Image (cartoon, rainbow, N blue to C red):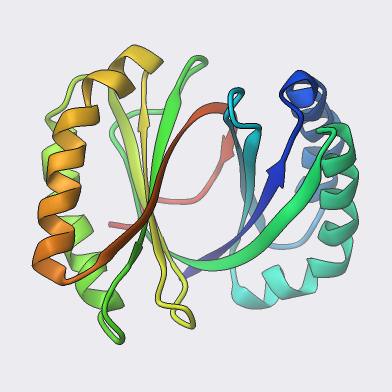
Length: 208
């Protein structure tokens, strides 16, 4: 089992490029020197200013040991984004499946769901056996991953697409599938957001 920590930043849209540059040139090299670090992704929405940086770790112990250093790094990054740190969340990485590597110009759709209490494993099963087979057949699909927080019960499913056009073309199909799956599981859809994949430095192995 691998783990991830996500930091959500409310950025000034005009400062997003500066923030991306800082994360790439300063934050990422610092993280790469830390024990157990296995990857970093940065999602940005230039319209809303919402940005999510997610670091991945080989173990829960590695993630926890990194916290004091990462806290300083995330606050410096938030300054460069011209905004504020909105929230920090920790996750188990339940599923990672790559059809192919995401290249420059890729986009990501994230869906936050709240399953009924005690039914996170049913959500994992549905992602593996319903969601992934369906999106694999859609044009431009790159990869899919599922993050879970067993304390809150919240899950986040992320699908990456070759381009904004591919993301948009998949919107209706994935919406219908999401509604059907949530209804079948008795889950609540908390939020759905679309992002530019600004940084994808990921070494997390296939977990599906």
